[in-house]
Length: 180
Image (cartoon, rainbow, N blue to C red; front, side):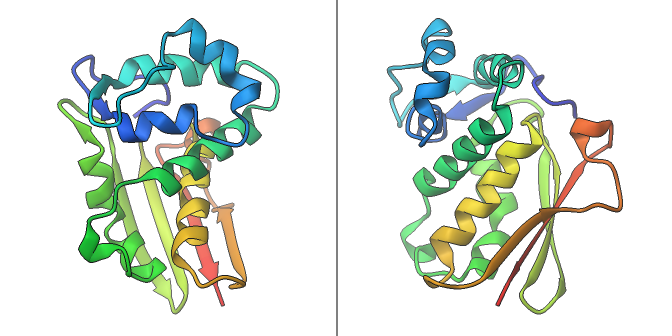
């Protein structure tokens, strides 16, 4: 799946779209979001994913796109609806469910996939084939680490350097999340 494109029928939850306007770098991207008419978001509605991807594509062409994307991803993790029975999960438990969470945020068409593996204790490998920029998904993983690890836990989130990311022409992107 290539970044910034999806099935025309694919939709995204408004709760997730809110991350465009409820992130710490919103002022940097506000004009782009307003241009695309995504400022009045109903968290209970569904929005065409391609509309969101068009915003993200335009952000990618601007300066500071990495910081903007990571902040959007972190906001998506913080704003994500988590079923009440999962609110007290550990980071490992929540990320092992992330493929399902990702599926719940989308409907209709092909919107990619996220697979989580556990190479070792306190280390998860997230394999992502999504239409989103790599840095958004990186921010999502970092945001979940902040949300579900105890305060003060040492955390490292990094791209896998043994294979090209999607942004570099790879077939998928791999992020490692480690904590101690």
